[in-house]
Length: 290
Image 1: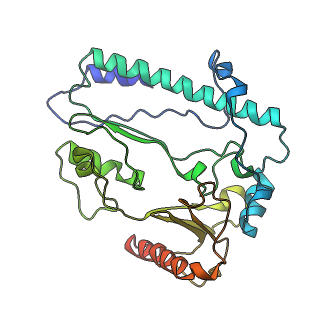
Image 2: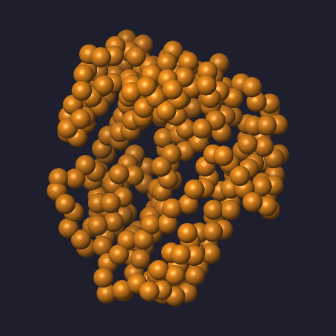
Image 3: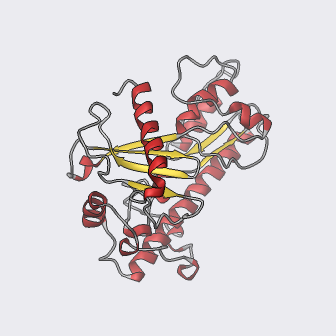
């Protein structure tokens, strides 16, 4: 893929804006890293999981589905370390592929007027919370790399939660192309140019647990609003289909970065829970899902 992309760059029409997508299936399960990357990371430098499923206050649907079908309780310490070693080695291999690609692109002058976006579609637990892969809304799964670089982008780190759905409007604005309206996600270009934090907006995600053959068609939804994160089963077309505590998880990430304490049943957080649930419903309605 990288070689084909470089060949295409050499033949491009430099007078016209263009978008080039380089998609690499790494790191991803099944996790395989080519030598020498499969043993490049010293196992003694690798941390063990921050917790296990027995350390968490999980709602029944999450425990039954994820722990029951994808739990790491059957893995030994050595197997977990090897899992992480190969995954991290695959990341190192990806770094090398990108280093070579960007080096070649720079040598041909293709980066002089180019914006680069590096992102992923999901993370991986690697045994954090007792899970291996991605099917949850814990930070290990839902928080992904999102890096941008190019002319006029100020160096810095954005702390405000944003969505990778902003990639398209951001790229369009950076390229000087009008953004079609209405748009579901805001452009981050102003914040990137000014080195300022973007305007805080709720970040949403959802998934269908039916991919595990469990509660097929039942949609699990999430909203991240500042430091608060709410996840639960919610039908965008019928709000009464599931109880409002179905699979519910509420975390405050500043106070509980490991997401060990589910606050959904705490009376003092009832107003926050209601506000976040209304955010999900309003988002569904705006997308014409409801």
